[in-house]
Length: 108
Image 1 (cartoon, rainbow, N blue to C red):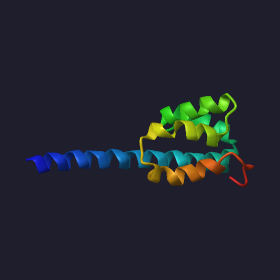
Image 2 (image 1 turned 30 degrees about the vertical axis):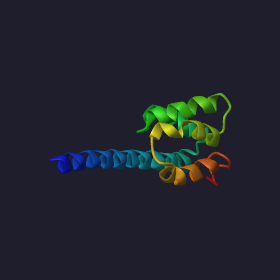
Image 3 (image 1 turned 180 degrees about the vertical axis):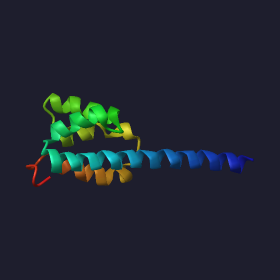
Image 4 (image 1 turned 45 degrees about the vertical axis):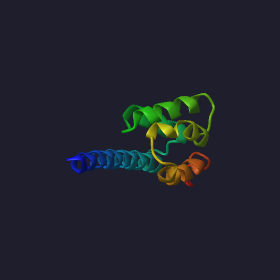
């Protein structure tokens, strides 16, 4: 019984992480669409995600910091812990955050 309980807890943790990754994937696809079709800049993209993204809490916090003058990379660094993931799992997103908003729309 203890093994079954442990397995159920582990399975739920994995399910929650998979849902988080699915939501992040949808938000990143939204970023790509905004850049390609709307030619929006980073701050406009983040404001849009704050209103309609899957991870609104994260995007609202980032949008607030960007409105106060932070770059996307700085705002990401301050708010990435909202996702409650291991640093190793955040590494690809950290790399994305370093460059996002630093170039023109064509480069993005």
